[in-house]
Image 1: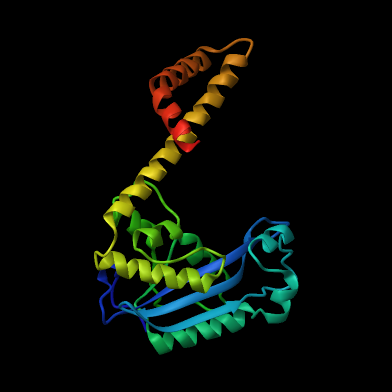
Image 2: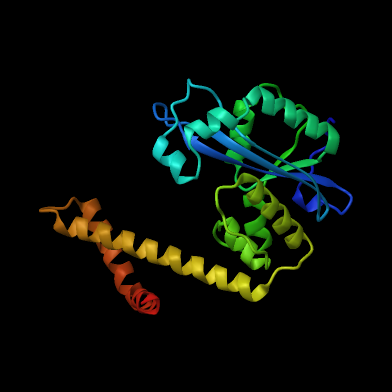
Length: 252
């Protein structure tokens, strides 16, 4: 199905099918490039799931996957070798599913999933339209920062725990998007998450400036530029010390 025009998440209706997808990936030991190890797709018409796809991915022995990282996300090489499909097989599956469900959009949380999928499929995904939910959700929910899928689920009252299962992630993303489009989010929870991230980012910034100030103070001599930076850091730390101490004591 070729696209007749650019559409976005806000164009999703009860009668429109969208595909929500997620990839799990692992670093290749030599190149450090990401390699897909699992894929999950939830095909939804409005708020109802009408189809799903999941598969382990085995891209071949030429990729030396980082074993420790692979184990951390719950996979291992033997599992992928024995049960994984090649990307050629997965490409055929995806094209067949696209023909069956005819989604108007493919939506992921982050563009990395889209880029990785396009890099590894063995045929061009002609006419497919992709959309990054991480561009839509923060703006729609007035969030200053990117937050996790679990936090979006929390705001929507959806029970979800991220466990590196791409189909579970894709299904949760579909539920979240539909909930947000319907205006059924919990404002108190949204505010709670916004404040949590604001606090977290403030603490990170304050501690980074503490480290920078300590480093510059410890130098035997400073250039004019370094002295200026140290003074700026000192001013920031003094101005925000009370807020920092409040957050630190609050967390204890």
